[in-house]
Amino acid sequence: MKLKFLRWKKLDKDEEDKLKMKIFDIVFEANTPYGKLFDIGLLFFIMLSVAMVVLESIPSFNARYHTFLIVSEWIITILFTIEYCLRIYSVQKPWRYIFSFYGIIDLLSILPFFLGIFFPSTKYLSSIRILRLFRILRIFNLSGLTQNRNLLLLGLKRSKDKIIVFLSFVILVVVVIGSFMYVIEKDHPESGFTSIPVSIYWAIVTMTTVGYGDVSPVTSLGRFLASIIMILGYGIIAVPAGIMSQEFSKSSKEEVPDNTDVCRHCGDNYHLDGANYCKTCGHLLNP
Image 1 (cartoon, rainbow, N blue to C red):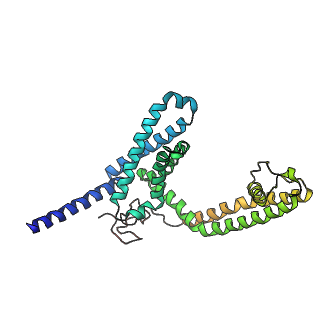
Image 2: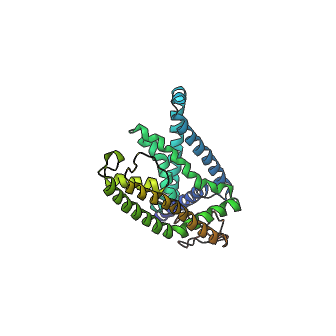
């Protein structure tokens, strides 16, 4: 009797593993019929949800269809919540998925709506769901589309260190110039340079060539320094574009994979074409 009970427990666990695998194939994979159908449905609901959030912000439309918008948003949010729970349930390491890039986006897509119950204005942040389209692009499974996406990600990854160094330099420049501008203009209240943080804000706005005009120098020396930072701004804008273009050019000469398989253990979705095992954790991609 005891052996039969143990055998039943083992069979029950096997059935649960099979169920998790089926759910994983549907909600994560895009190269299966049910997975592609699921992603197409998800694409529709994401676009519908974002459209309703946008329409709800229009007073006249919201006054006329308020009840319909609220009920529809509740239904869609519940569906997204169930989907999020299924993703956590089907992966081998839930915490790895929860804190992954896509896991955070999936959570942020449902969190603003529930926060909106207590803080009404936050529900409009539900439009962040549009970011989930990064995942849904897999449904097209087109070689050119997937390869271009991977090329973009590879170029950004390779240029990350250079861009961080460049941004660090820019931060140092705006702090120094902002401090100098505060010293120059602090005795002229009409200029608007009331503190160093305000002066740094002015330096950022000027260097990016935005120029709101709410803070501007009135002294000759201040205007001379402003002219220098304006000219410097044009060069600073071009540098990141040059860095990324160089890395994209290098990456385009290499073979960029278009594999859409997702590892159930670590969640990595960037693998070489025809790969059977995950390059990150070594587990079988399609058990």
